[in-house]
Image (cartoon, rainbow, N blue to C red; front, side):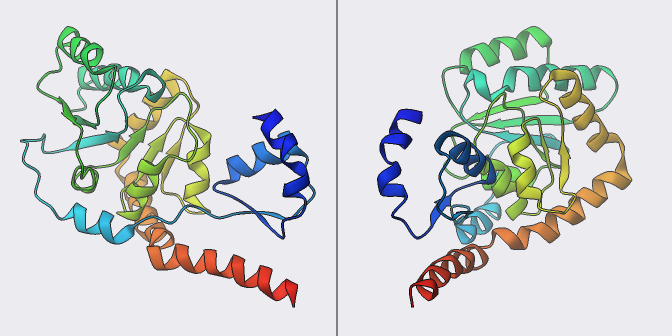
Length: 242
């Protein structure tokens, strides 16, 4: 990556503006490149109409009455195995809830085996790949990003678009919250993530605060808002050329 960026510096330095898709990407780019040209952040616009429409579609599976949701490729870096173990621990402590994981991938068989070993077949649902994950997100208490590493977590953005709070173990998700309490950002270890999920399940006052915050923040991820922000960047560049 460093080599590719440095090789492109001559071209980059001729640009009026360099746009990064997240604050995390901006920091990484500046650290590697040392670029002196103006750099700004603009999230990839979310197709909010598709997300909102999908949220209203019926769910065919029988799901637990109260459940938390996670969406992503079933791969090790997504941390779904630790999320299932956390779910088991909370169930053992008397916190009844379901866990719905939407996605497919190479860890599918391992996760199925883990679910059987822990005896949580009745409360953990692996839906497999779904073209529309939004109805599962919309019906959940909150979503969880259990990833060990992540760029800009699109499932968390989609969750906030639907006004659903988020618990995330990876710090880049925090920038999606803006200055609003939309859930919890924990440390990226099992104990901290468990504590975050536990708090959302047990602290009704905090949960309602996070729910209200997610609903407030949802406006930031409407397509018209995100497109307008992109247009403002282009307008500023063109104004500077006059």
